[in-house]
Image (cartoon, rainbow, N blue to C red; front, top):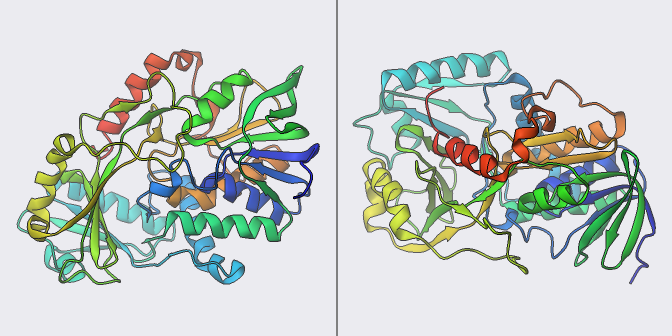
Length: 408
């Protein structure tokens, strides 16, 4: 076993998709002495249970640019590293069930085209041709983005990790960070159970643990954990490997193909917070108990869209907590409290879609002192001191989760 490092230029904390992507991009940019520390095993936090949908369009052009970068990276990653990623460009379909939503889709399509995305508006019957299992009796129209897709979260993270190693980064699992050495406005060392690593910069990609990790350095990371559930079915007749991902915002749900069956999840209007007294020790590769009573509201909405679900066999109802933020946007950038402490966390259940681009942006921020383009909607500096109050963070976060599919 190699000796535990005593120094590094950059220490990345957290072995989920964002941490591995950041290490990958740092190393590919030529930064030597990149060390990634993972308290358990890669993907063991929330990455392993992510649903894996990869959509690109957001209302902000530069956030869309990050997501389109993810797609471009995922297109080539398997060939580069030799590790399967489960990535496929099967397209993404988004429905509208009323005129207000259709107006929103029309605006989004025009916006997407202005960003260079090949979006198209569809009639209900055209949407059904792409997604034959759905009932379109209440559908007004739809938008389709053929370059959207889906990935296997664990596989794509392992592929990024291999790419990081090939470029010279060192990844160390089963090592717990316990604190930081700080001089003035800088972190000078990362303290672990295996020793202290002197470093020039730190990147906190700790997922649900990012708030706690930041607090050890006096850095506020405004996020909290929320239960997020999705259903996995047995094979359903008519579900094909090329079935697009589907978002049905008026019914609060999303779908993707999985081994001939469907994954169906959504954003209920009464979300349930988790770990209000702290994340339990040893919470690795762990799911929460299925909450069928709470999921029933989404199931009833989904049955109206996909009648085949009524007779489908159920493999599992996955209940995996994830980190969400007070405004529904993720958190990137240099912390205002310290000169060399960066954060990439709070991905609001779209970390797989964001992972490639977020890692690229963080790496450039770390190496150049500024982001590659204006990322103010996700910059950690957007949160004021009132968000040191965890009660406010939690209240605003639950409100943002409940409005996830609200009309903009």
